[in-house]
Length: 394
Ligand SMILES: Nc1nc2c(ncn2[C@@H]2O[C@H](COP(=O)(O)OP(=O)(O)OP(=O)(O)O)[C@@H](O)[C@H]2O)c(=O)[nH]1
Ligand SMILES: [K+]
Ligand SMILES: [Mg+2]
Image (cartoon, rainbow, N blue to C red; front, top):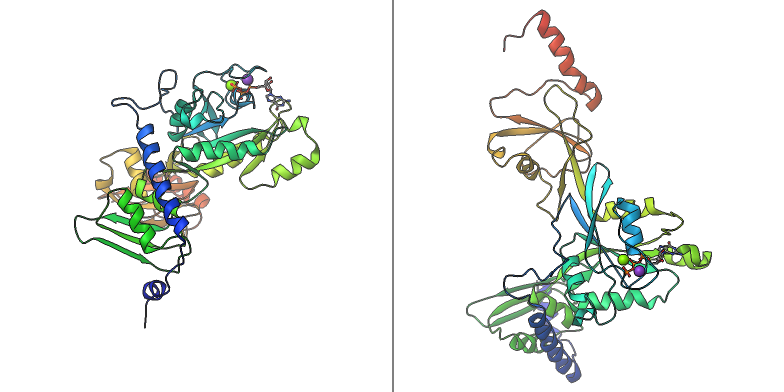
């Protein structure tokens, strides 16, 4: 039986001459951009007034044109005052604040407004974009009363410097080799790129030995992203502020767009919805530690994230103490990741938000008991009562 790869190769794509030329040009531009954006040796690329220490369980950056209400929003959500005024470029540096939400602390960064051409260094565009790249998600703040084109302009500016918003990496396997030439394959029929075009682009990058496998009908831009390898894929929420000054039809339309929230800082409208969306996008996983025989402390979770170090039991243990893992026999898990309560789990088990974990160390006895979390948590109290009267032998 012929494989998907073979059949895809037998029917070559019709890529016209113009596409070859354009593809090569795109690769040249991407290469130059990368060179341009390389920060000077020894600097983070952020620059004075922008070097803010990371704090809390996650970092969120506010990006937007001048005077859309970024500073007003920071002040509302964090209580940290950031100067707001009706003139543009009120904010000139990076101002951090902390959002307390769901027993976690999230660092919110207010930034200067950026304008078209920011990616080429206009205004403080470079610094703003460098700081944004250090965040876990971006809130793109937009003025609901202004042109909808603003969202596209900002997205283009961010794309020009390698930020990819609400996209996943292209499904292209790419590996440089020492010898063997270029092997080009695909698991499906391609309509944008063929072998010749791929060779040309790799040639532009002076890559002569590599394995390339297209797992989707990707474009030249996707291929360049994969070769460059320095793209940052981030979630972005589009925040339409100032809905107090637009009609209800506009509000309705904006609110229905994907990844969008409509708010009004002035009227304190829908800020809780924004926080909930932000929380969801961050994908933080709160895990509560349950000492044997005691209730977990539900105010002080260990906070894990798939993007920052992972969400397995092992990641959880490492969070508590680096040397803990080697002493762990297994753990007991209550919560949505458990099939039954409590479930005995190993280090590879994936934890979910609001799980409760009790660590059972080697040569340590777990607490007994069946049933649900509530009744189980009462068990140790009963045992210790009995122990008082007739101490257990073990
Ligand atoms: N009508 C209305 N005005 C708002 C709202 N939020 C903020 N503003 C006003 O918009 C203006 C700009 O607000 P800022 O918070 O300074 O905006 P910014 O995005 O931080 O501006 P820069 O720092 O200059 O980039 C101020 O006059 C605010 O009072 C809102 O929800 N509705
Ligand atoms: K302003
Ligand atoms: Mg501001």
